[in-house]
Length: 505
Image 1 (cartoon, rainbow, N blue to C red):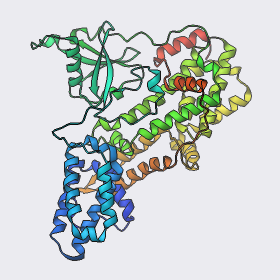
Image 2 (image 1 turned 60 degrees about the horizontal axis):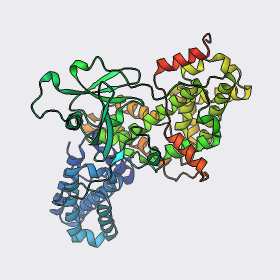
Image 3 (image 1 turned 45 degrees about the vertical axis):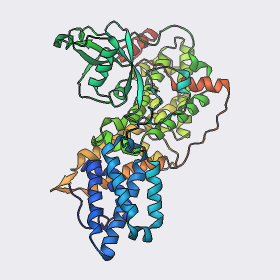
Image 4 (image 1 turned 180 degrees about the horizontal axis):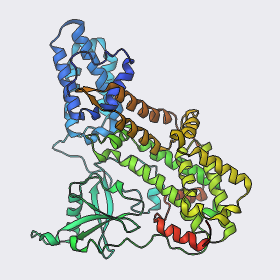
């Protein structure tokens, strides 16, 4: 797909800045980033052969596009080696152009600053030392790690990860987040000190994701970025094909035993505020382009959706945490108090404009294994029963989530939206119309996609400010909220539920 030779900003239906943003946010739907930048580079070169206002106008349009591209992509460009070279070449062309320097000095200086600050992955003879290795979310339960402010993951980041054997022993490997299954198996083989002789087909290793329910998924050698796609309590297993059928999940991480868990000792305000603070960190780590890539599978691939996948995984984790805590509480009176506490937590999260946590808590209480506990729900005061009904109405998907959309439309930033609904809307846009019509780009579709992405930008346009004390108790609650231990096996949740109330309907 070639850029039209005329000025790309001549569409009369949209303001120039909006059209520019539309193209930068959605170009990967019809043109890979490297190809897009090559076209931009050639466009500038061709403009250099024109004299007068037309040539200058094209150069200015090209500069405006590059500035907006760099401003939008920023940290993502460290994953784009080819793009880095093209940007560097185009930057040098622009900076040498005297006509631009005379007319657009502020813009060219800003371009210089952006190129200086944006990380471009351009290999040099003397490579800088490797980045610090990061423990991946949920793979290691380390208090010092979970208390640190979350930072965005990139595909080139190196992480530690455990890969298990059929006997539940494991090796710890160091890997790039974007590593392929083949690369992971290579690291595992090296750790296990397999013979360097070519192994027979029956002895070659395969990589399998095993869920706590026992469900197994065989990962293909060419798949990459598999770490962030694992379920909450899923683990990677390396085995031979002969031992695939015998794989069983690791023992449950939570030992079911009587006694109060930590949630009984903490005020709902503290838990709700720590939920909001943590989910704001995770939400801030998600680059707005990850939403486009996740739905449209742009050429950058899954490595650039890692932060979004981790946020979605966290939403599921909170939902299962609610169900787990309720079903581990054996005393009926305390269990009713726990329902009351979770409803309070949901209310405070809604007040914090953290609709992700709000939704997750409500869905946890609506888990079939929890909602069937009729005797427990009957002990709940009428006030809280009515409040929970209102919350269920707000999360009701009827009429395209009308109630939720009305509530969030009245909120001013900062807001943490229910992210799965944004992905649902983008999927609807994707499947509802073609990207190319008669060989031409469907501008209306691209604009609708970009408008949805701009809502994410709006939600994050102001910083989150929560008044939370700094104390040992505060740090303990923070660690608890950021490292939930949950049961995500629905069959096990039902077993616990029937032990509590065998005859409830």
